[in-house]
Amino acid sequence: VEVVAVTEQVVQVDAFPFGEVEQVFDLPLCGWVAACEFPPHTDGAFQADPERIAVLWCQTPARCGGATTLVSARLLLSAARALEPRAAQALFSATALSVRRTSSVFVGPIAWQLSGNRHAMRFRMDTCASVAFDNEVAPAALVLLVAATTSELVASIRLEPNDLVLLDNTSMLHGRTA
Image (tube, rainbow, N blue to C red; front, side):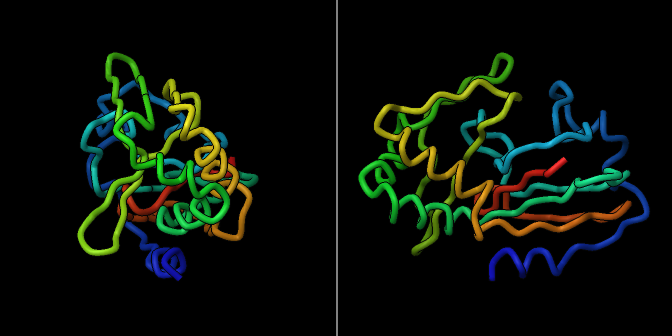
């Protein structure tokens, strides 16, 4: 339901609202600009305080594949708690995750509590950053990766030219199929 609500709100724009893509990201270009597969992740996992809003924009869709995948962090945490309860608790540990990207290094929790019963998550397992998990966390991190790439928790949408998706970067993982 969370993902469906987001996917129904894809909108079209005439041009990317922040200028050229290369000007938007002051980091080295990575998979988000290239036409390649990218596993579900949150942006800025290597930052102590990642951006809350992610903007996904399609300039030119892939000829084959190229679906955008969306996965609820809340549902991923529930899957980890069900399959690896002890390791899932370690996702909240201050040393659960270590991410290095260029000169940026972050060590901290994968998941954290927000107000009420809400949780946030940072997650990345791709070639854009060097990622290491605390040994206690590894089984739950594997559950997160498998569930985020192969389960019924994943929603796929195909973006057309100038489609724009805004999402909460700490509650919704996003990726690409090609």
